[in-house]
Length: 289
DNA sequence: TTCCAGGCGTATC
DNA sequence: GATACGCATGGA
Image (cartoon, helix red, strand yellow):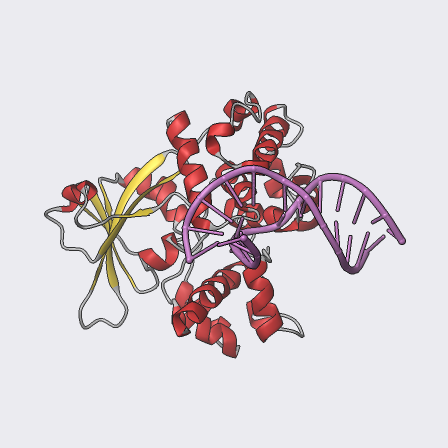
């Protein structure tokens, strides 16, 4: 993992990192693409970039930009703006999973034909290793919901609390006091999760060390957490790459490409493979219409 | 208007 | 254990 510190920025040259494919693929809900005409773009007025995003890991903000390097197949210059080396090493290296070799992963995955197509379709996808509580809470909100509306609910939540709320804060709320979220039937689930964590009935650090089956069961004692949300909390919040969330889109993938089971080449890394498959089925088919 | 969205709780068999 | 249905909200 090579990087350099330049003024107040951290610079990476990377072949397996695309901001659109990683930050806008339904695994995290707080990244916003910066419109070049918007006020946010002012901070980048002296920067040469193709695309940029602003967002958060829990309550640490980041402005990140990408510029394709001409003549170097697929490589981009990624800049983490106004980021100290200690924040980079302490937060962002893990968040963007920078110690994992995605070229090697994709190569292994590509012995399967569908996986090969999915990796080729969006080669810049990376897993985002999110905060445990942020991931759990976000995916409780995600159920039977669409991505733009999930983002809206989480955005209203963060605006209201001045950042992503702690479970202690949410444990004090009621369905009525959370009406401003317009989260629908999910409000009571958010509160139940917050109360179980706040009271100590459940502990996400403990759960993260359990074997997969015990961790699932423990998470599913929360109202509104079923197999899919538990799997997402484990994958995105606790880095269990062998967790495999199955939502309506992945059900379509399985029905269409894997009626007889998942291929061996993704064993142990099912969760990461799932991210390529999810993006592939959601975007490829709409693009073909 | 109806259908659908990164599902789950509940009732019923 | 399997299956059917309702659920809040809002965009297509």
